[in-house]
Image (cartoon, rainbow over all chains, first blue to last red):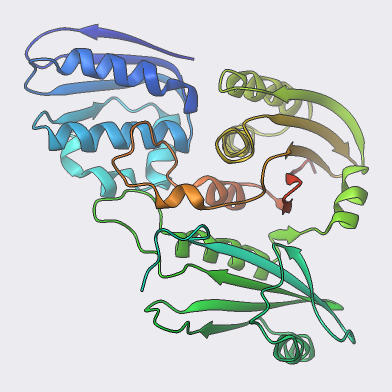
Length: 103
Length: 258
């Protein structure tokens, strides 16, 4: 199960905790949509994500591409080892662009 | 031209030739009538005789993408993989893998012995091997985490190291996700202990492997599939076997224990 919390501001951060799989789509999309309202950009903090699979990754990629097309860039910060390993394997950086990973 | 309205935008059919036989039999899918049996038999015989993987591009009339026939010798039999994409190509901006990549991944895995295609008799025999150490029903996405947690316990009890434990859990998540998305939405997973391995049997009663979802436009809301599930499974597990057809799909996922 994925849990989210939002630190509001002009560049809000959505803190993610738990597991990202097919089950997280609504939770993640709702949190990011709320955070993106009126924001210049949105950050996702992955430091407490313990597990992610290709479905969780696909949901993140889709969100990053959607926000980019809407003019609200999304950045990913503090990738946990579990997330970094899967993102590297699936070449996520190539799919969403280097700018999504400012760290 | 590409036919994106076709009911079969892409398919992987697998046929089997047994040395000395007059023809081939379908193991996955159905025997396409336009494929001449005598040519299949001749090529399969040659692959067996030379003990060499052989691959041919087959041009379709009015199509700009050639389909492929791969001959994979395996002892006294030759598996023949027929990959057809009907000219399907990746949409602009689509982050999902192309069908050609996915199907070629499967063909390569069969060619190098990582993936075994099982017929019904082989599946029945393989499903009886070892003793059952766990059984879980899968009915919705909430079961994904429960399945992973249950598998983690079994892997720890078997003394699997951390990296292979994490990789196995990832593969189970991919297999169960495939079942939920493409296998009728429910099924079960049985964990079996064999002398040298743990075997995770993920089975559904869905319509069989299908790639119909790949013709959805990339803007489809909630689309999570990137097409990497089978790649992850084939890269990270020690051995994989597959049976699929209109009666459902069964994956045998093996992690060696010694």
